[in-house]
Image (tube, rainbow over all chains, first blue to last red):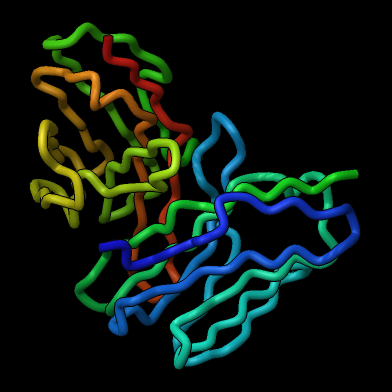
Length: 115
Length: 114
């Protein structure tokens, strides 16, 4: 049973436009959500996160939105740059700061930003 | 700080051979993890450790063993490699002292089992 779903395996956008990556989850115990970025032949690197007590978190060009009632989150990248081309993983955890130290990852979305 | 390092970077095994992957972190992190990444499957947790001397099973533990004898090292062993274990393996660590702590990943080990 896949608890974190990224239904779009790939996304292609033009440089300067907005990229929107989506993620759905099924486990209502998840209360902390993260996005990781991964370039080929490298390990994933943390990008941005959001706690379930918030519905939006911004960091420069990156904004994550959380809709708890729909169990949906999205990552917006504005403006998109060719260097943003990578695989983006959505991840979630339950009981952040408590006894659960595990992350559940989605399958990833390959973002290609065309010059 | 080197962060999280993994040894080796690449390895080719024959079916039935054994090997150990080494993960080391210099951030004094309490928690360490082993994942595998397969095409179209994302990152799946194999085993993890919440402290020196402890280990626990993740989502896909079969065929693997782990040990955490020192806080900074987390070893992943394959006793009898199978072609299904061909994958890219990532190690990660985190302090998890605060709810905002994230996992830091190593560069990965690409393993091919023939």
